[in-house]
Every structure is written in C-alpha cells, then in structure tokens.
Image 1 (cartoon, rainbow, N blue to C red):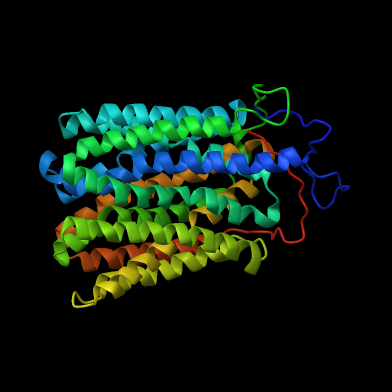
Image 2: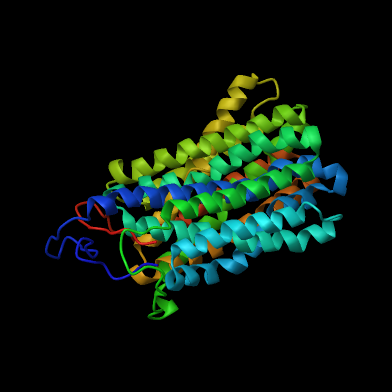
Length: 430
C-alpha cells in the first residue's frame, strides 16, 4: 500500500539534501486520518488485551486461579505477541500498514469471542496465545505509518498519541468491563471487548481505504538483511524495555488485587485505581512525547532514563505507603506512577523507528518489542511468585523498583544523535 510518490507527494528528504515542495493539502489531511485509524485500532485491540488483567479478579474464583496463575491469565497472550512480532514487522514492511492493522483487529475480536466460550483455564491458554498473535500487529503497523507521515519535530508527540491508545484502551477496559462482569458475568464482558475490536478495525479501515496516491494496494519489495535491524543500540533498547514493560504490566495486573487484599477495598473500588493508572498512562505518553521533542530537542534516551528512575521511586512509594494513607492521596500516587511506568512507550517506539533504515522500520519496532515481551510475559508471574514466597507485596514492589534501575543503566549504553535541526519532508504511506 505504500507506493512510489507522485508529483504532488515528495520523497523523504534530510537536511543535507535540497529542499522540495511539501506534501499536498490532501496528503496533509490524510496523515491525520492515518493517525486516527492507527489510534482507534490500537485502542480497541487494547481493550481486549488489557481487558484480561481487568477481569482477572472476577475470573479468579470461577477458574480457581492462584496468584501466579493470575499473572499467567493476565499476560499469557503476550507469548503469542512475542512469537508474532517479528513476522508482523516483516508483514508491515512488505504488505503495508493498512492490511496488517485491519486484519489484526478483526482477528483479535473473533478469537476473543471464541475465548469467552472456553470452559476451563487449560482451554483458555492456547486461545489467549492466539489473541496475542493478533495483538502483535498494531504497534509495528501503526508506528511505521506515523513515522512515514509526520515530521521529525513532532514524531515523539504524535507517536505518543498513537501509543496512548494502549493505556486508553486499558482505562476503557477497566471502566467498562468490570461493571459488565458484575452485572452479567466476566465472559459476557469478553464478548463486549471482542465486538469493540472488530468494530474498531472496520471503522479504522473506512478512515484510510482511500489513499491520496495511486496506484494502491501494491505489494512492497523486501530488500536488505535483517542484520541491519539487530544492531547494538536496538538490542540494548530492547533489553531496557524488558524491565520497563515488567513494571508496566505488574502494575496493571496486580494493582486492583493488591488494594483488594492489602487495603481491603471492594473489587469495584480497586478497579477505579486501575482506571487511574491507565489514565495516568495516557497523560504520561503525551507528556513524555512533548518533553522528548521540545525540551530534549529530539533526543529519546534521556526521557526514557528519567522515566525509569522516577518509576523506581514510584514503586517504592506504592509499596511502603501506610494503609492509613488517605484514599485521595493514594489515587494521586497511582495516577502519577501510571504516567511514568505506562507513559514511556511512545518515546521508545520513536527511538526504535529512528535508528532503523527506512525500509526496515516495521522490523526494527518488532525486534525491540519482541525482546520487551520477556518482561511482559515473565514479570507478572515472577511478581506473583515473589508475593507468595515472601508473603509481602512490599518486597515485591521494591524488587520492581530495582528492575527499573537496571533499565536506566542499560539505556546509558546506547548512542543517540539528536534530530534537532534536521528537516524531513514526509508523505503518508499506509
């Protein structure tokens, strides 16, 4: 679907090359439709993927889950994502962003509906992995489309808008699905999530099915070696993301259960704190994207290191604050922690995209995300084991804080060149 530019649609240029005419008005308007489509599909797929942590406390009794099994229930679909990310990145580079985005949303919805009918935890597991396969599609597809469509000076901010779809979907899942689970059952809530994923894919397709350039629907030629993707910096960025995603998914998987068991809140009350964490993540992604573009002058490493260290402090506070703390203050703490530990992804994806060759951006994002899946898949399970072994959430939250310090140390190992002052003319490509 990305095709050679026409007369009114310039090629990508750097500051070292002659200036060219900017994209047509139609192309400029179309890029916002690209953002809208990528964001919508990300939100509705995230309602599915983030819906499992939101529904885990309700499924606990029905399926007889232990704490470690809750961690598996909430994150097992990320095993499928880990497996599918590299093929998804290749598909984006070869087939185009739109095909991969729409197919992923529809597949996620259909398999989620089937999962809602599964009678036992053993049947659930393989279906969750299949959902994870579909859940691998929106990040490389949406990110590559946005990198192709927007200027360097705004990339982290716009990418953060798209990436805000993950916590926004999580917030909507925490807001919508628990009341449905209380009223009608958690399986019925899964049916609602499935329907939203399919609807989002169809509406997203409608937004971008008429590209402003022709011919459309052309298959791209795969060029070059994957060795150009698995560089030193990309690898260290991915390794740091293991610990960042560990913190993110531990928070969304256990915050409600932690408050239910330790603060003796009802599940309905505790679910509001999951909403707060994800709402903080939405605000944080916009904040850190803006900070990276403006205050850090296009650098991405510094904001990611800051997020790691602030997140470490946040988990220490969450774990050691006394249960007599006013609920309003606790709400602020959880919101602020979400703004950091859920708010970093847009800057991270932008960094992965910018260090990659232009024809391998999908695979570069997929490579970094595939490494990060280790933290998503293993973190919540390890956290549950540590809580059971130590009998203390306090120790487990402290361990997460230490993991984020490791992330900061890994990020210091990468080199980065600021994009400040570089002029890049872009064209929508989806």
